[in-house]
Length: 227
Image (cartoon, rainbow, N blue to C red; front, side, top):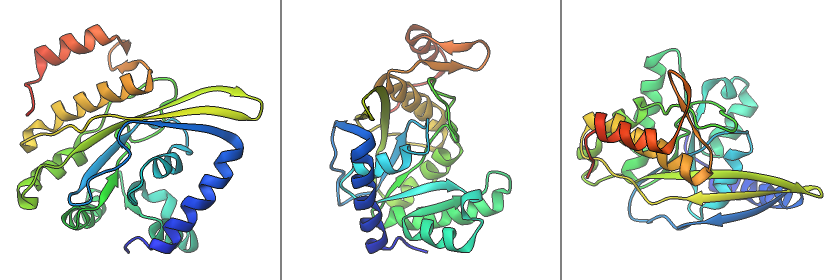
């Protein structure tokens, strides 16, 4: 099911009105994505509010990769799908493949897709990025006959003043890669940028938090540069 423009626009206006009373939202960076090409948007994920906040930050209508559990009930499933949701089954790869085929069709028509690269909530820390979808997208990049921009987005939740909380959405510069084999390096670059934009430290798989100096050293050692 493709996104319903009326449902998307109405939901965005309602979110803008409701969030006005609870959040003071500031957006930094390039809000306008190119209309003549696809894009993958990679935001930080801490709360459920990240989803409507990302939708409010960009002028272009978006699609969102979401876990299949949200599509369990028919009415909710139809609403989420009409608002641009694409279900992904994290346990059964064949269902994920079906959703990926839909994702590729959307990219071919220059749609913008939001993927939360951590896969779930990580509060006050940047989790390890998951590169599977990135790898699959890069595999089909030649078929699209253009480089796909991967846009990192940081979300900073500040202090609450009265009943409103400061939220800053920072949109980074697009990242690019050539080949499917560049997926891990691209994901690492994106997660590093998301950490800087969000002003949140990164998680180390072995020991917890990874400092920016450690990140730079690890990238120079283990990953080849991307174009």
